[in-house]
Amino acid sequence: MKKPEKIARKKKFIIEALKRRLDKYAYSYVSIQDVADEAGISKGGLRYYFPTKESLYEELIQDFFNQIEQDHLQIINNPHLEQDRFFLSTLLGIEHFVLNEANIKVFVNLMLYGLQDEKMREPIKKFFRNHLELYKRVVMQTHEDRKSLPPMNREDFDIEFLARIAQVIFLSTGLLEAIDPIGIEPTRLTRYVISLFED
Image (cartoon, rainbow, N blue to C red; front, side, top):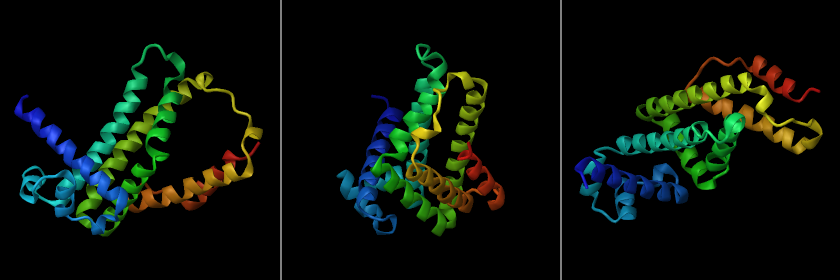
């Protein structure tokens, strides 16, 4: 095995150890030593690959985005899926990331770290910006392929489902705007969310 491949595998192994720790503990309670212990390596061995705690978390952020993008591209580039591919890509992203409790725990830890530490805010902001660009492409393609989306009957959605969607939009927008503001006006957002539920 070539040295760059070996380094990449070792870094991935360490990142998986960090994810396991963040699944159990808040980021503020996870030290470099804890991650090294979880990975079964020495603290010095870990620092060879990640000299600072920030560099370790930056790699975790990049790992998250790479996985999201890889899942998306795998569907988008599948010639057998034809028109449904963007819809399926979004569904896969929701299932693999948003509805995965371990991922959410790690994600919340990253958000908290970014809100409390200025050094971490920039890499997290970059993650959100890259993710936003990915979704821009999905939205643009979906607008072009509207006929590819399955028909929607509003009666299929009960009030609890609709309330949760509104809650998710408002809460996540607040978090995203705190780290990577794009200037969303609360009144405009409220009007948009209400329009989603109008017949």
